[in-house]
Length: 343
Ligand code: GTP
Ligand code: MG
Ligand code: NA
Image 1 (cartoon, rainbow, N blue to C red):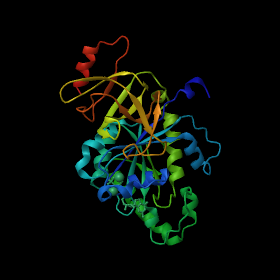
Image 2 (tube, helix red, strand yellow; image 1 turned 135 degrees about the horizontal axis):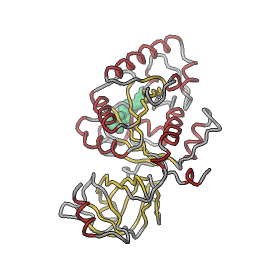
Image 3 (cartoon, rainbow, N blue to C red; image 1 turned 180 degrees about the vertical axis):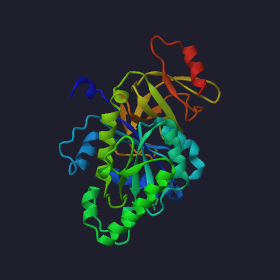
Image 4 (cartoon, helix red, strand yellow; image 1 turned 90 degrees about the horizontal axis):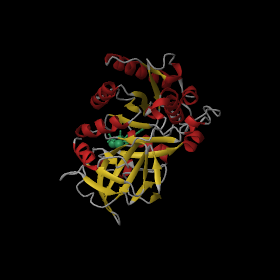
């Protein structure tokens, strides 16, 4: 790999869509976790973050393309709530990402928050892939765990294939009514103009290898410049939380740059700018959700993109949704305190 390829940061992928389309369940399947079953009412109420190391993605996609050259170090996936009351979190999540997965329930088609999510993506010109989820609910679907979708589809009965095609055609029309061209990714000859659809099941995993490979290949191919690490820190506070043994901590998404233990940081607070020093940089284990309590890994420094829990003094009044700045040797602290409060 070239020097620049080695310096690529992990792309950030935001998963969006109407409530109960299976966003969290898809992540659970990939992680091998059951976060969704532990959510109150089965409803996501916070932004989540999970880091997938590239080795894991390579492993899961080898049936599709054993020789695919994957250059990014991993993929950071941001989970968002689909419930209508959390549009601020959907907006925040979509603002952080390089690419999005828009999840559509194949039995329901485009719904209210699908359209709302689409509008956010259009507004920011964000690339996205449609996960046409719950294919296992097609009547008579035969399960082929973790299998690439073309292979799984070929082995379905004619009735299943017919129902799939009818629903797919209907959903492509619904997208068209929103001004967007979409097509099954393996039939898409016009990538870039026509958005890709990947049929998936979050219960049995058909199509998951396709989804992962598409995300990684698409981002590393078309976003090379954006993913070539500059040192500029870009970091957003997701949550302000008390964590046992750590006092008040902040969960952040580091979008770009490197954070170090001992860095002096400035964050927006309810009573003015907070200036403090990073005491510890913690992450969940790879493939674990940041918003779920668990054991943490300690780091001396962390490179983007990552979901991180930061412990430091004085974070009690920090405000979620705002930017975190690191004070550099040439920075004027007073200027930074002003700009952090402008968020
Ligand atoms: P919110 O975060 O609350 O917006 O919902 P979500 O999009 O994260 O959906 P969630 O993962 O909570 O799944 C909602 C329900 O659909 C759960 O009961 C899941 O078990 C079910 N479900 C999700 N994906 C699939 C799928 O691929 N097949 C089937 N049969 N059920 C699914
Ligand atoms: Mg969810
Ligand atoms: Na849900």
